[in-house]
Image (cartoon, helix red, strand yellow):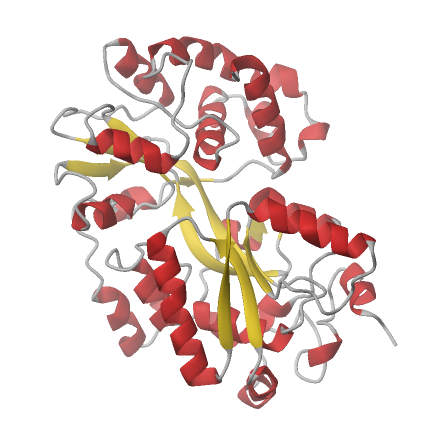
Length: 410
């Protein structure tokens, strides 16, 4: 009998054994309702341990609402296992694989993207091409960041959950004209503007460093193309030299003068609210709208991106190869893609994160759920949100972080 690990290693062209009767090929788009019914029936009574970041009360409350819906509708119990860094869970799965724990795993579903997905895929720790066969998959946008996760092909191994883009939140009471390029930001701080970013490997700090790299390489087609390849295939020192030259100029002008750093993007928004910086960071285009409505930022803030765009990506959920509640995990992933769950997630009153669904593919009732969401004037304007730059290959993050820390770490 073919094992789940063996199936996983065959490029996941087959969905693993538990649901072969329902899903037989990753090439099949969406299975008939009768076959999905077999999945929901198998899921009844299962407890799904969902390992996801637990550092936001709003996200925690959203997942608690999701748990209520899943239990009442599908008799699936969702347990949110609050995680500080999902890389720790990747390490636990790698350890389980080394000792041959190929079933009975304690992680049924996990929130991943980027280098963590790449690590799981490269070491055959994912279950199969389940995402291509979820009923709600036919509502998902067709976009490069959904087909490939940080330039790594997804191949159905994870299901999209939310969209994100690096944005700047500016207090227009202090800054009437926002700096809309890396060069303009440098001039802004040289002229007395106040700005700071989290030190890598903090996610938002690493993302901003990647953003700066994209900007300083603008016009160098060969170097820019190298960013889509594994970093070991590139001339890292030569490609990144303009980045370090730029940061050498920027850091002395920052709040903290390159000696101290915010620990997170949340801290930059607190500094903005306290009047200690003029511009904060977020990876959620609707973050400012949610913060204003919750009295965490002044009404004078607005959200913007650079004129040539900013890095954006998609985050996903995936099922490890040795998960215990695989059917339940599929039901959860499908629910998280439902218009109802996505519209609530997009509402700043609850979370305020852009949807991964194609609203034009919905019926009138489904569209109405999104039309009822009020983002306010503080969110990123829709026309600017279309200006998204691709992430470099997942391997670039660790290399940039190591080089940054070598140069600027305390």
